[in-house]
Amino acid sequence: DMGGHDTFMHKEICEQPDAVDRVLRGRIDDRFSTVHLGGLNLDPREARTIRRIKILGCGTSYHAGLIGAGLIESMARIPADAEPASEFRYRNPVVDPDTLYIAVSQSGETYDVLAAVQELKRKGARVLGVVNVVGSAIAREADGGVYVHAGPEVCVVSTKCFTNTVTAFALLALHLGRIRDLSVTDGKRIIEGLRKLPAQIEEILKTEDQIKEIAEQYAGAQSMMFIGRVRGYPVALEASLKLKEISYIHAEAYPASELKHGPLALIEPALPTVAIVPDDDLLEKNRAALEEIKARSGRILAVAHQPQAKADHTIVVPKNEDELDPILMGIPLQLLAYHTALAMGRDIDKPRNLAKSVTVE
Ligand code: F6R
Image (cartoon, rainbow, N blue to C red; front, side):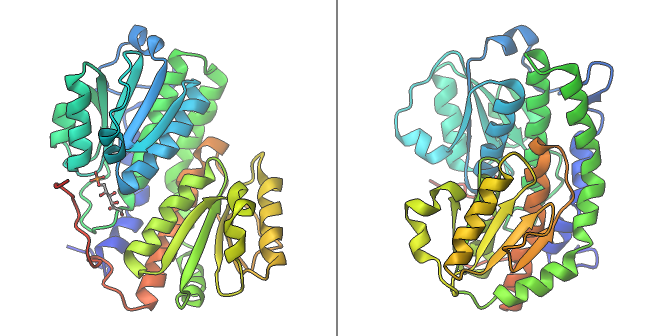
């Protein structure tokens, strides 16, 4: 049942305020400015001994894991990184007893992720899951974890589950942070930010008509570039994946800082750039990248907290805490991919060559 929407993708994009509300519900502890994660199965003493966190997933879940790694590093100050699960499996990785492994999956059935979890467990590692489907294979195989509570996701491409997975990582990062060095004040600040998310997502969804108008102008492009820095880079990766999956426009994502090391050669009027430009300590750096693109007559669509003078269009999103901004900045880009694909007459819920869950190698 599409509930009055034309596609499941649109329905699922619009469900995000409720979905995020669900992942937060019953988990916030205001007394200690932390969160409770019932199924984590990691006691505080163990949590203090973790030296490193490795996050594994595929596709959109990998991108959510990249943002998750950043959240864990900044809030819990534990070195963390994400890697595609299939790459990890095939490179005979060093499995370190002080590392906590986290498998990320919407379906909980993705074979490459499941196989990585099984290999890790065989070698004695501790593996948690950040999973949407309750009781799925990865959820059962993991030692514990966090359910994402996005609800059923029918569209082949993931939207609400991405947003909820990143939010679940924010909860995990806050939890680990408050056991380690994150102050009460910072804990409170993050909790206030988390509570604002559903209403802010609602605000973004209200700008859909404007995003649709912009999307229609980019719908004819052969190729598009997505750039961001640090927290914004995984947002660029995910936006680029979403666009290519449903519109079949070629897209690539680069860290904005890497432009001058090669991809700047591609910039010309026919290659539009989508730039993630949050109002944070990297704002001036990001603006410099926009200038470099404009100097090569590149068209720019910025996703930012205030209109960007160098951009041809800006989608303005509400500001949250710096750490949580990536959650909000991803949402208009789901709508951008959606309306671009729609303008091109694509079959949005069933993109060619793709399956919802990849249970083969
Ligand atoms: C992208 C998409 C895929 C999945 C990937 C992992 O829109 O849907 O890239 O994210 O196949 O699937 P899960 O999260 O079920 O393990």
